[in-house]
Structures are given as structure tokens and as C-alpha cells.
Image 1 (tube, rainbow, N blue to C red):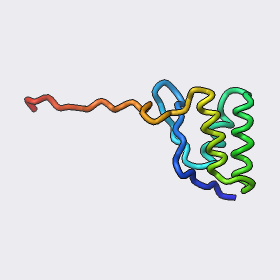
Image 2 (spheres, helix red, strand yellow):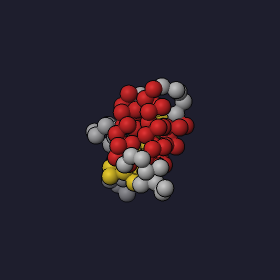
Image 3 (cartoon, helix red, strand yellow):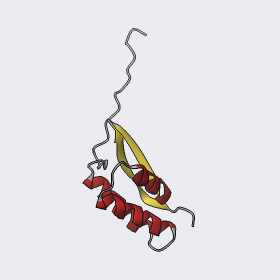
Image 4 (tube, one colour):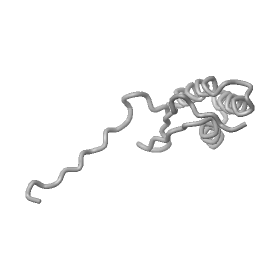
Length: 94
């Protein structure tokens, strides 16, 4: 089954200040599978993504499990967490 997009992407931190947007079940599955660790939350997220990919559960259910995993690992980008890019200003004499 083709990966279904999430209604709203999941955004996670992948490095110091580097967010990554997970738009589909496949994106989330790949991210969680590559995550270093073996926690119960990670295993649940992998199972949920696999189930969504086979059509056993809907993508939004898998998304909820991935969000719970990311929140537990403190890598979920919550609303308001995104850094505001610095404004680039030109000198007034140019």
C-alpha cells in the first residue's frame, strides 16, 4: 500500500536546532526505524507505522503513536518551538 500523507506533518528535532518534517507514514517509519535505541515507545511507533502501511490502521492513528514516541524522547517540535530566523538587514549606506 502506498504511504498516506498525514493531515498535519510531525516535526521532530534531528540535531541541535535542526528540525525534520515527517509528512507521511513512510517518512515516520524510516525516521523511527533509524532512531538509535530500542524503547517500548519506539517499538510501538514502528508497529503502528507498519500497520498503517498495510492498511490495518489509519495514518492518523500511526501519527498519534509517532507523536507520543517523539514527545517521550523530547524530540517533538511543539508549536512555538521553532527558532525564528534572524532578519538579514542591509547596511543603510548601501
